[in-house]
Length: 66
Image 1 (cartoon, rainbow, N blue to C red):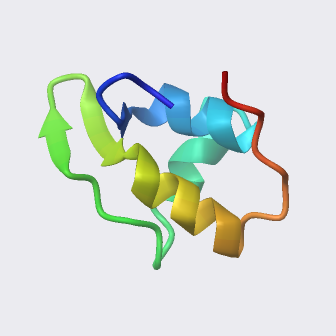
Image 2 (cartoon, rainbow, N blue to C red):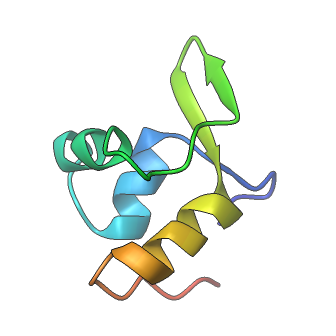
């Protein structure tokens, strides 16, 4: 997804096709990957972790990557 392979909450929301409020709730669910960093801007997840979680747990098809 990103050049560095990380996703902040906004990118998770975009990937899952939900708004930021829903993404916040999803990222706090048991079973969602732990963030690899907690920065001043918020938590950051590895894109590969989010994509793997979505493939197993999220019913929506993620957007195509370019």
